[in-house]
Length: 106
Image (cartoon, rainbow, N blue to C red):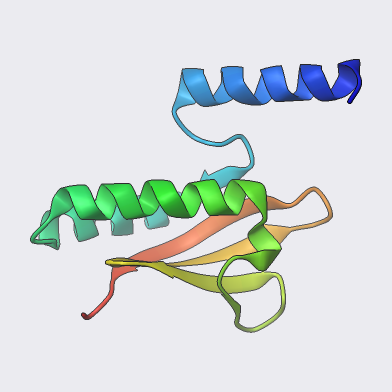
């Protein structure tokens, strides 16, 4: 470990603290609307919120190992009960753009 990794970790923690979300996971506006609709529709809103948080954590750490590929290896779907999301991984930087969210039938 060196100083640059310490600075990166500090930057990550500060960004997460100030915004409440990982720095490399971005929800497009329509996906945020999907998530809000899923929360309103769900019998257990806390379960949807917690599932979204767990998915964001997985996407922030290893997006290419999260979920299953769809049209390409960069476009994927992931599930965390009761929520499903579609996302894409952008380039080598492993930035993630969440494209949609929905409640899973259980």
